[in-house]
Every structure is written in C-alpha cells, then in structure tokens.
Amino acid sequence: MSIQAINVRNQFRGKVKEIIRGDVVSELDVETPWGIVTSVITTRSIDQLELAVGSEVVALVKSTEVSIAKL
Image 1 (cartoon, rainbow, N blue to C red):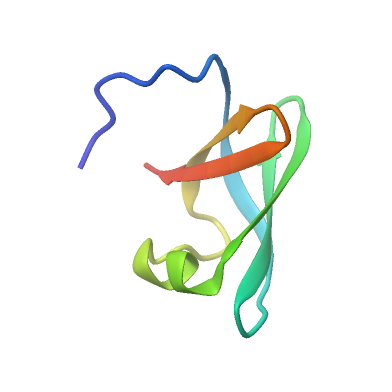
Image 2 (tube, one colour):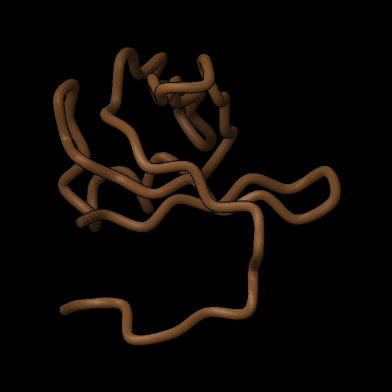
C-alpha cells in the first residue's frame, strides 16, 4: 500500500521511537526532524499496522488529532 494523496497538510515523516502499550489504547512517539510527535491510537491499530520501534511512518496532524500511516 502506498499513499497517493491526502488532504492533511501537516505531515511529519519520522520513525517510531517508543510505544507504550495499553489494553485498548497505546501511546506512540514518532521522532521527526522537528521533534517528537506523540499519538494515542488503539492497540489493535498498532498490531494491524505491525508498528514497532524503528518503523518509518508519517504523522498526520489535524487539529488535536494525530493519525499514523506506515510507510
């Protein structure tokens, strides 16, 4: 899968630095050239995207929400 286009303007490419797993939601820290971006997403999403420390991702920021796309 590759992202062809997306309407979110605030995109930060980086690598997963840390994952703090919870039963339902987990905290994901993404290290970018501009600093750390933190996202709280479902643990199921982390498993389905096969995210791990070192995974290349794009943090998509819209208002108070940070979404994650695996590269």
